[in-house]
Image (cartoon, rainbow, N blue to C red; front, side, top):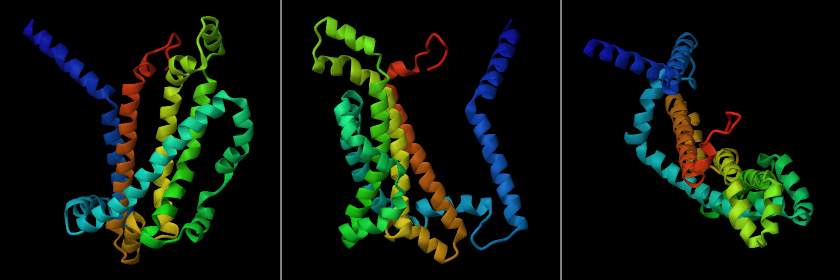
Length: 277
């Protein structure tokens, strides 16, 4: 009996391991790292280090001789990121909700929203710098670009969240005497939270992109300055390690947003009758 129970537990453990997405992610990482290592050993380049050298450079950047430069650059870049993304949330979510709810506001704002969607943001960096200046690390210009990158995702997804609310619910609430404020509090905002949080995730990714783009293309501060320094010195391992660190920061921030989403909208993970979310 004990042997049968032990065998069942072993089979269950193997099944859990095989069903885990972490296993397949590690396998994919191992295959990618192996191919990278073989390719760089066969084709040596000053700016393309081996996978092993890149992995070894990560702790050196985080805790070694380059750590002070890294953390200073992270601080400078993330200050602009936090300010810009906070402004995007404060302005973008309410504006998207209002556009989705009131058609007159949408008629006024749709043109400008379409402009934000189609305008290549990199092309307006010189305009921002000329208008806002480059003193004190050009924080106003960097914050403005981050807002322009992120806010459109927040507006579009918040608008979509309002539009996906079943009109029958609103009509039913009105039949029972609910006012506009009560409809917002009990129907519109709770129903829109999943779409809003999706916009926050997408906007965060675009905000990080904007943070790095402006520092690389025009204003050499923060992480952009550090990337340019490693590139100029042909420090390929540190260059790739820095990019990996930035990617991991973005992934961690997005996971934090996912956790917040699970807290504020726990019903979203409940299965529907169709088996989807």
